[in-house]
Structure formats: structure tokens, C-alpha cells
Amino acid sequence: MDDHRPDPEVEEERLAAVRRYDVLDTPPDGAFERLTALAAKHFDVPIAIVSIVDSDRIWFKSHHGIDVDEIDRDPGLCASAVMQDHPWVVEDAAADPRTIANPLVAGELGLRFYAGAPLTTRDGHGLGTLCVIDQEPREFTAEQADTLADMAAIVMDELELRLAARQTVEHELGLREQAERMARTLQESLLPPSLPEIPGADIAAFYRPAAADVVGGDFYDVFQTDAGCVATVGDVSGKGPAAAAVTALARHTLRSATLSAQSPADALTTLNRAMFIGHPGTEVEAFCTVLLVWVERSGTGLGLTVASAGHLPALVLHEDGSTSWLEASGPPVGWYPDAVFRLGSGRLTRGESLVLLTDGITEARTPSGMLGSEGLARGLAGLASDAPASTIVGAIAALLAADGVDVTDDAAALVIKAL
Image (cartoon, rainbow, N blue to C red; front, top):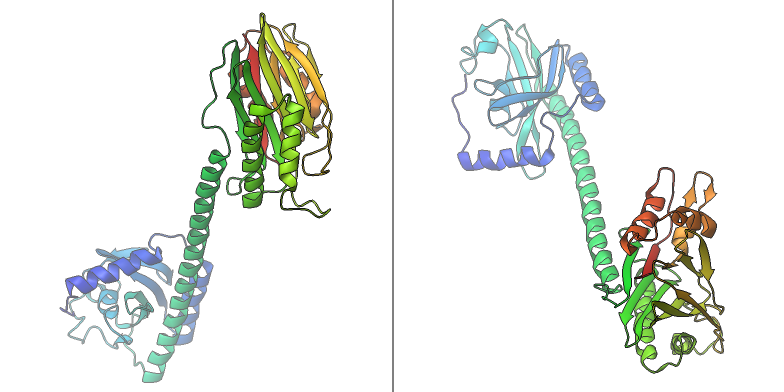
């Protein structure tokens, strides 16, 4: 048998290439099965194998005419063939000094003829062989050796194709993960980092983007004032960076406008003007719906003043389990330069809650149709009056996560409970 041993450094690089192609111990594959069957038929031999030479074994990716999945690497004919740059041929193994003592020759198999063409990667590493085997000696011409090498190249082309496909998928996954990280970071920057502690109120929020790799158009915000707090939810047209820019404009403009505005309607008017800065024509390039609520401590409850820019009304959960809607009127900001926003008002007594939400919640598809405002109200109506705001938020999340429910848009909710 051949006593040559590969250089350890070269062998380490070769084994790294074997790992790169990730073919070891993979299940049977029709493409390789057809190739070994074709090789056996073409060369009129009983056995044909696609082998991969591992560190301590020779594993058969495909084997025709023999029911063996692997053999020890030493001694092994493929381990010798893989170190060549051309087909390695033994016409009579019982008389060839390279193989006369090989157990495959002297043992039960009784191998007499072996021809193996190396499976060589584009960077010159031998992964294994396409080999043909017979139990009778035979001649093997140079033309046959060239044909075997061509067939081995086809095997290698198939391995290269699969490697390229896997690398493409891994690259796409990497890009998606990167996009999701960037979207998550940007999304987090558009939401308040934490909810304030407001005397007399319990506050919780919920946000669910429609897609992990795209910045959503919904937002919520809440911040403390001398009298209580200001709460808002909004829905910006579009997705991605453009929507993120409008979201940032809306949040920060509303925060600034509240400092000098006489009412939430005045704050929306300021935001509407800001939306048209830089867009003097009649075409509207961006708009958003907003619900803005000023919350003030009042006796044993919370007084509410609300203004709406084309947004869903707020849902009020009463202490007796019933529900109602806190409404106001006005068009989305960014539609009309001279838009007028009209106020609404209400009050929360102890144990009652205000739910500000976006239409990603009400437009969720259930097995019986759209969830809708009334479906949401029914889903929350049975909550106990002592349930904290976080429980209400959890109930909304559970409605959207129920079996058969399909949420196709961003969803946001902000809950304020009077203590």
C-alpha cells in the first residue's frame, strides 16, 4: 500500500475545506446516486462511490453496488487518491505494491481494480473521490481516466452549487438579522425609553411591529406635566426610514408644542403646520393620524381633554365592566394646511382605564372577521376594576396572539388607569 502521508499543515487546510462544504453525514441524495449509477454503468463495474475523506474515516456520500456507509481512513485507497491531481488507478491490486497488503484487497471484498478521480475544490483542496471498483483486474485507458475525471468534476460542480446556495442563504439571513437589528434600534429610538411615574395613575404600553426588519409607522408617547401627563398615540403613513422621520417629527413637535399650547387641539395645529414646512405645493408627501390626550389630576380621578387628527377614539373601561369611547374630531395632520381640530373631554374615576390604540389592533383578522373596535371592547370588558394597566396591555397582546388571528400592521396601545 502507499506509505505516503500528507503534510500536516496541508492536511489541516484540506480538512477545513471538507468542513466548509458541510457534506459529511448528510442524507442520501438523488443527484449523487444517479452519478454513481451512471459511472458504474459507463465503466461496466459493479461498484462506484462518491467518497469524502475525513480525518479518521472515509465516508460515502453515495455508494452503488456496496452496502457500506464508511470505512476507516487507514488503510484506504481514497485517502491516497485524494492527494493526487489526476485519477489514481490500480489495475491489479493483488500485484500492485501500493495495495497488495490492503485489507480491501486481501480481505472479504477481494478488490482487484480501483480508479479514483479526486474531487478538487476551486482552491485546490481534495475533498474525496469519485471511484469505480471491480473484483477482477482490468485495464484502464487514458481516455477512460479522462472521462472519470470529467465525472468527478460534475460531482464537484454539484458540491460547489450547494455550497454557493448555502452561502447565499446565510448571507441573506445575515442581511436580514442586520436589518432587524437596525430596525429595532431605530424603532426603540422613536419610543419613550421608559414610562413616567405619574401620581394618581398607572401606565403601561404595548408595541408590536408588523415586521421585524422594517421600522413601523405607529408610535406612542407619554410624559409628565405639572398637572398630570400628556399621552399620545399615532400612525404615520408608510414604513421604513421615511416614516421614522415623520414619527420623530410628530413626537418631538408635540412635546415642544405642549409647553406653550393652550389645549391639545393647539398642539395638533402646530404639528400640522410643521408637516407642511418644506412642502408648499398641494401634494401631500406624508401624513399621520394622532390622538392627543391631556390628563390632569382632579379630585379622586383624572380629567381628560382629547384632540384627534383622524385617529381612532380612546376606549374607556369603566369600573362596572362596561366600556365607552372618548372621541374628538379633526383630519389627519398633513392633509390640510388650515385643518381645525375640535376637543373632546371625559373623566376617569378610580379603577377606570383609558386605552389609546392604533388601527393595527382593530384591523387584526380573526377567524370570524376583523377584530374591530367592538371586538376589542368585548375582549377587555370583563377585566376586573382592580386589574393594573399591565394586565390590560397583556389582554390586548393576548387578543392579537390568539390562534387564527393575523396581524398585518403595526400595533400600539397605551393604557392609563386612575388609581
